[in-house]
Image 1 (spheres, rainbow, N blue to C red):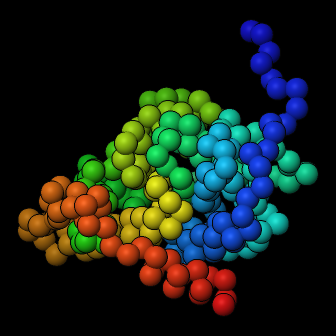
Image 2 (tube, rainbow, N blue to C red):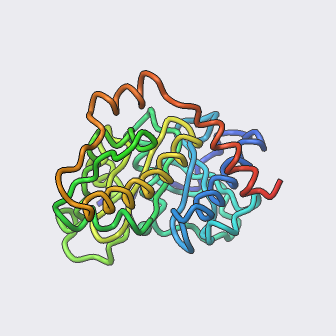
Length: 248
Ligand SMILES: [Zn+2]
């Protein structure tokens, strides 16, 4: 097989507004503070000046991320300027989703715990309340065994990242069996909002099922109205979360 390895690192997509870098740092800390990320997991945003690049932290616990830790990568997840920094093993999730979904501007990968049961049982995730209306498109479940047989469960290649992106399809959320989930959005605040409320919804749905009887979920029509026609003000929650996360 002929080598197609590039001779050097990919060129940068250009300078990025420091305020946007600060937002990405805030997103990482917010998701840690809200219990979506712990010592693991990551959030990324598409480069605002070049859709073929994205930004994410070097390999680091999300609560510890600072602006100096943000790296630029191409969609094959090669770093523009590694400077000896180690990268997340599962960064291929982000690159392959940005490649497959031009509408997506931010990606969250987490192991948020309340969601895990919905990836390993036959109970589909459904929207329990308006804050999780975006779940009206039922999240698919990614089965890594179908792609790669026995693995360590992690998305450690572009091959696996592309398979996960195919399972995600046009959805906002995909569950990863026995591992975690991936959440996408048309902006960084919306992706963070969805990741937080995916976890909250999982807790509420489990509680509703435990209470028993038929559960009256939001309908697809209600989900569509809230998500696409009359979206709420994500900015208000984002400003609260960011202020708390950055200690301002
Ligand atoms: Zn993971």
